[in-house]
Amino acid sequence: MCRAASGAGTAAPSADGPRPCTSRPSPRQPFQTVSSSLRQVNEILFLVEEADDGSYRATAAGAAIHAEADTLEELQQEIRDAVHCHFDEGQAPALIRLHHVREEVLVL
Image (tube, rainbow, N blue to C red; front, side, top):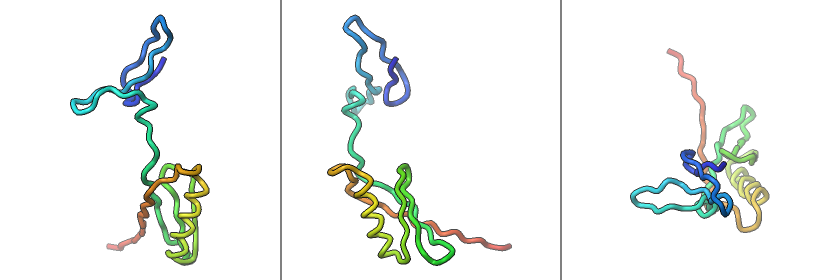
């Protein structure tokens, strides 16, 4: 049994074999097969944090990619290198977004 990309509905087998999975149509979009709706990732998000020793660490959201460096400029280059190593040739995202996370504690 096959589930649709949206998580709702199933495709029942026919006499010719199983039918391809399809997503639910929207008023603006016709049916699509799941395989045709999968596309190359265009962007990857990294969470950047400053470590206790003053260095920087970055972790990709949704992927096992990590980098660390002493400065933000070095970290940016380390992130580029890690992304190129992680993805196959021609599959790397076009954009790398950095989200700087800074924790602060306020005492009342």
